[in-house]
Length: 236
Image (cartoon, rainbow, N blue to C red; front, side, top):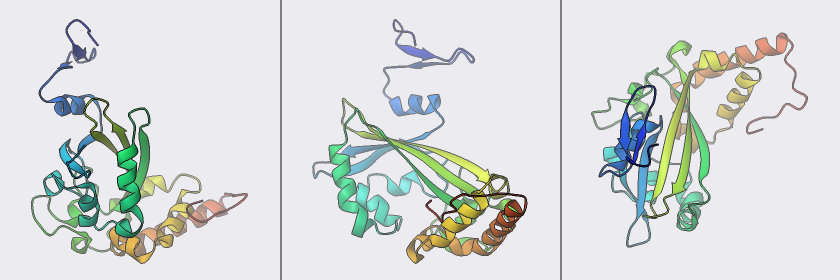
């Protein structure tokens, strides 16, 4: 960081980025791997998606969610139990969030293709009607990936806006299943989903091939001496 010139310089590439800019999201997105989404409070007290740099979303499009309030973003995506269990508590949490206490959370999905930026198995990014109903059921296990997002939320101290950062991790199932205990625990997790979560995560598109593979790998690990002192089902 050069305080006199008010810019950040990447030494290895020579690139420079201005601190004061009319397009801060653009420059912020060039400095980190994460996608960025900006929520701003409206006159009605709700938080609206007002900006973002979304490059590798996987399953959703910024143009579909832009200007939506927080609740509608989740209901339009059919997030299970949002209205019953999450809506009120999430809105209160956004209201009370302070700049001094950022939050980190993780999610995970199973994806039936190997494309990080956009999961083409649910439909083309450029068309309407995307969804798990478009996916070809139970493709070869080599095509199926475990996708997890590290999301952080923080309130910006001057504007009061809330900034999401979204960093996906994308690993083939055949690779993640090499880790001790993972095949058994992931299979337990998938089997534990209630019906609404299973629909949301597209379980019908991959459960036969994924569960068969994970069960086989778990059995192999046990045969090779894997021991769990206190084996527990998901979420352990």
